[in-house]
Image (cartoon, rainbow, N blue to C red; front, side, top):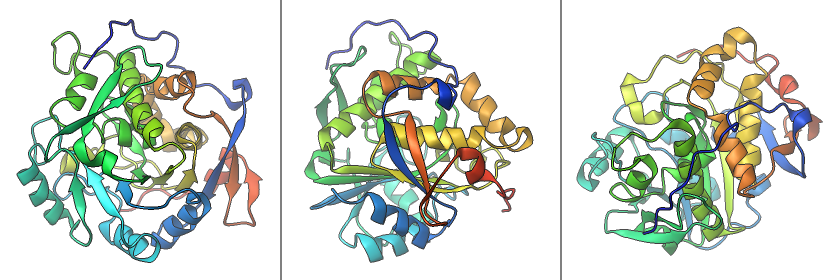
Length: 331
């Protein structure tokens, strides 16, 4: 495993308004329907290349985590759309209730993830995926069984994140596919100091890890982001997560990982100051925008996109129009 010496990016942690972006546009589909049916309709728009043995990567959460995508939603969605799929996860690097496979299995049971196979991919070891064009890594260590699958659906609860600023599809696979003992250590470590990595270095390492998974699956990977129960905290904080103050928005889907994460950030930006203050502050103070700029530098997708409102005849809308009428989170 080669870890290159590199210097962190600079100037990458700035929100770039749409009019300043360059390059091609990707398609991002949007619905306000926060339900299993909403997830299913979004999946139908982006599943053209999904076939064979399919994995669904999502964050199953710490015990009793209040903000995860409801297991009942995922159950209903899978039964109707991908009945033979398996949920995939990896063990955690931090101390907690998912650090070992045994602990992780107990947590899965507590949270209700018992309706389909759940593959803890690093339970029996690791695999190395190449990182093409990275400045930190030549390869990244992932859960061993990731490479057993033909296709991958990245089903993400979009929210804040203590270190990443926000957790979208990039974080879901960049951290979530890296194994708990080696891969996650590579991402978080700086010169032997656990958790000592600075903000932009962390964003870049996480993104290079995500790129390895994106490249591995090629066209047989797709992304759905659920903008619901968006605390500034990640689901890895469980019941200790900060209160939700950001309004629920809807569900977005794309075959472009950068476009779908960028669109979610743009939707948050388009909210009123009162509605988005906490989440924007979390993204900015953690240098979270570097996730987006580095994905673009690595050629992982487009930060320009066409946002399609599937609730109203597939018309093109702007983020401001999409968030009109959003309602405050009610527990």
